[in-house]
Image 1 (cartoon, helix red, strand yellow):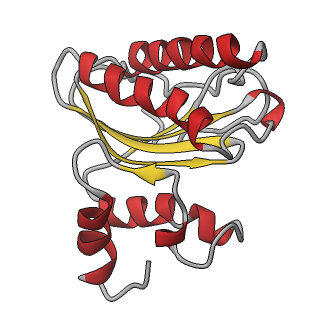
Image 2 (cartoon, one colour):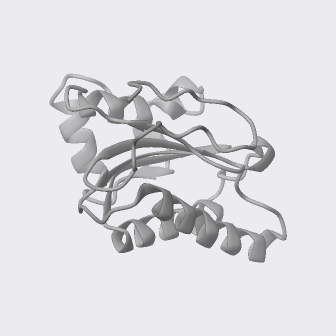
Length: 175
């Protein structure tokens, strides 16, 4: 099985790992892009139309959302499959379907680009570094100077303050 996933930008689905089922207990770093990379995630109602189905369908498909960050034209999420029955492709498909429908009902426009990008975390990867990278996106993009200033990130398993304390404060970083 290849150890890296090749990411192909565009409207088509990124290739999945050959021989990997995307079912069962595993951790994934995901990126979903908006259609035409349009800046949709810039206000609370739009973010909420995607965040609510993310958390709802994660639970239904037996995933935990460790962290998420809605950038203007894409979303990053670190999700953990918690069951042998967890199916990443079904979960993401259902999340995109529900949030896309809610968005189209509100705006009459398409929300998502086709497909999504994933990285299967390996046992030896430092998940706190993955989460910090994910949550540092608004700072790297120049949207804010500190993470606390950015409203569109969080976790399905802990509060924002708990996430900051565990990932940043204890490690000596300034969020």
